[in-house]
Length: 530
Image (tube, rainbow, N blue to C red):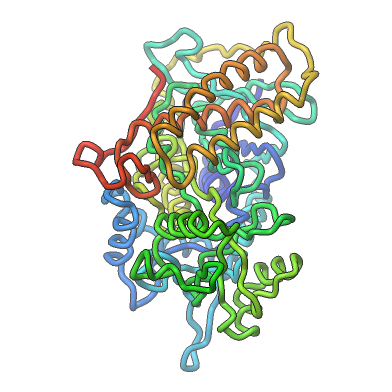
């Protein structure tokens, strides 16, 4: 049995930042089911929203966040994250990250981007590969830490809790079972401070901007352990994913619209003006629904993002990664509009925490996209997520260092027992169930919903969960099987949460209740087992 002072599950901006901050306070294990750089963070193009300009203010950033969140943001949390942001950005730059600058009147200043829902330019970026540069910076710094062990190709299976072991009177997190993908063995790891930083669940949908690792693992594990989960009905669909048969999950950053890109339908019309006075820079929920409506009305397969009025030099300098990627698919964005469709992008709900990453279970923390702190409410303001990752992680690290288990009793942890199981002999069953979950979620629990569709999804998911549970206990665990199990659990949480909300608010839009309801629904949707 291995034992660490801190165990971090996930290697994005939140997980790596936490590990760096607690490295001098004990032994740290950072576990990730693929390579360290295979994270949602590495795919983030836009940047980090933070007040750094004299033309901007904390009050404006707070106001924009609250407005986007449609009445469900925790204003205290919003203010904390917005006001503590600049200091966390400074720490990031001290590690060597250099945000883009521009020359104005003979002096250099930050080249701030503007995205949907923001009233000012406040998005710090490194061209259009901000997340990748952040990831590389943090991994480089992590490699210099002698107290931190990066365990790649290790996938967490389940949390070990006192209640599961028969100590219900003092339920707390004691450790985690982890699959070593190289050996195929499940290890028992003890720690009284487990940090979930596993990212989101975009792969629960057919079309997503997320990488393959985004299978909702942290939320599913926390749910099975009895931890509170909040607001899972609010899945943000990014309006502009590249529409091309060979392009897999490639995001066209909102920053393209921030620099003047215009959404046009198949007739070349700037249709967003019919839906919102802010046009193509309206918040994401409004833009995604507008695109969905245009596609359904016209029968077209996509809409188009047009930035051809900007110079080729500007486009190639500001968006080199997007430009080159589109070019590989035969699209020169400096000469032709980019075909785009909405795709699942961000999980605004998650494991319910406070602004310090503290969950409802002692010893368990959640940070980053896997957590629901109250910042995003019913709809995330663009580029607020990386800021949240930095600020909440800093506070979680301080809290975790100060907090150790109050119990003097060291509960013995049982080794993993696989029982009399066999190797999976029908992988086709796993792949079929995976595809079925993603298709029914896209068709029934997408941008526009109805109670009837949600109930159909719920009924089918209950059957799938039973099938997967039987499969799970009869065969040896594998990454594919674990991801399927987690996807099914998270899909059911999204559906159950959506059925609870009898109104349209933010990212949850239902034809049965097309307007915001009464004050009963101005609250989080909180679910927990039992």
